[in-house]
Length: 400
Image (cartoon, rainbow, N blue to C red; front, side):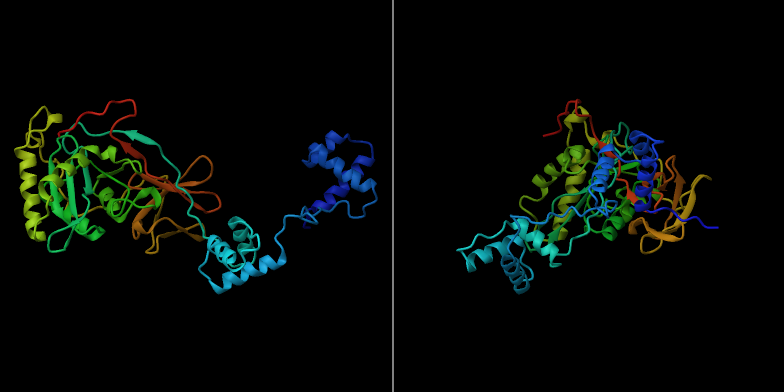
């Protein structure tokens, strides 16, 4: 036998039947039905007044609003929008004021509300903000504990060709590992880094800003490039947004490189690359660095212990993780449906482990990407932010 759940109307009628029996106090009934005493007395007054539909919810829409926009004004607003489909509320108001300066037109915000009500504005879906994971204060005390990577601002050579210099330096020793003209794309940067890794070796971590191709707005802030770094055993370290001071050593090198190689620029990109090569050798081997006690970066740097592997193994997850492979569209199969994780992880295996609240944390190579809640919705995690120093720590003077 199936039991039918009682409706809110039936519950309210039963409440007053119990009240009239005299067996319960008002406080007892309000606690049992999870309502306030004020709500109880509102229903009771309506019931005593003879309202036959006292148990139904009343509309809260006011019967009359003296500030409502006149029908004629609404029609004029709609007509302007239909005539100029790309006009927003401010331009529509300005257009109406030009056509009929003798009338007082509603504010732009009111016009916007009217357009939404009339179905003439389609609201944009907003991306949910990623959950923050806090800041970590860390740099590197030993060579190759961390590298910094970035593009120095682009410029043009005298023949009009655009130049995008990719630079890589060692955080501890300030050793400049690369200064190479590179397309600012995933393929361009990956090819350049494959060359650096093949010639030199692998660092433990790479510090960068959050922009493409280094980072993204996806789960964990990962891009295709940082996914590759993680598979190589390199930890991507993202600085806080709009905080170039947390990559300050690298930025300071950029200022010196710009002054010595790009003012003025070379005639062609090949000549410009020669300038970068000469600067890199002089910066590493001949230029004393104040933060290094007026010694050269080359005297402190040494090659990494790890080299570029011939084969990259897939990530391994503990036994308490459920493993799913990300589909080409960035989704995984989960509990009979599909959950979008991120296109940067296409064809990669991710691990999911249950947390104490019933959701599942999604991980890749030890990096937490986000949380799938009990309803199957994915909540992105922002990456932890890596600062060079705490707010209370003094800023050390760099080489001028």
